[in-house]
Image (cartoon, rainbow, N blue to C red; front, side):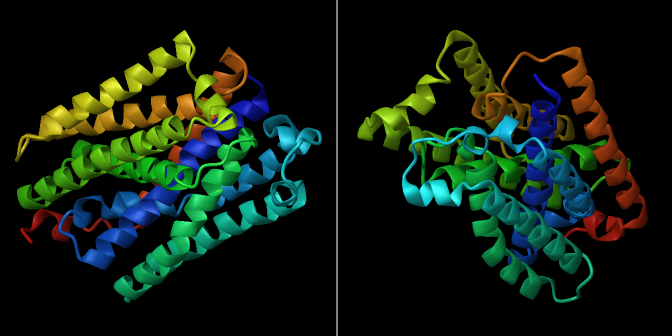
Length: 316
């Protein structure tokens, strides 16, 4: 795995958590949900790390031809898609996605009109996350296009963001109220089930249509190694669902459930992204270094942001 490939993988992973955290915040504020308070500080901190990811995106712009085949050499694509996937237009869109998300992250964390900001934000963020999934992930296989892919991939990012926030919340000393944690547990379980169904629905549509260039996307990911990775991913998801299904699960069970959900997301994303080349020590070190930098920024933001402890610990 090259340096650019390693940076690309960690960029998609971290951008997904940051953008997914914005969606978690907006849905929670818009619906006045009880589950938001315990994870609000964590979600806000993750969303506010987006400027770091913009800088990482600028680095990746120098390796566009190495990451996306259409940027390296001409491909036999429909004219509209070839125009859409031109390098200049791609970079303008990518910058716009990140700048829009950065703008909403700062607005949402500095306004008193949370419901209004969340309603407007969701209207913008839905197409942003959908088209960023098409551009940053699906365009690596430019011959295939799926209208459901953006929604399915976006759901995975929201699931990862919520699971990460729950994990950090449960590791803190201040316990949230049982009723709020029960609502959080239901939210995580709902996302797990919805994510599983959406990815299955996409596979079912492709299987029923049986169009060669669409089937090829799945065939590329159906060798023994990839099938083992996919089986592991959905085994982790099923285990998380089984743990979370009983009502009023314990703190430890919820901790395990969120870890399993996060591991499912990581393994499934690797299956989707299909990083090119084996994982070298250099690539692993680069990934860990960038992830550590992001965690450092996240921790610094957490220290200066409100904690919402009183709201999280009181019964709704």
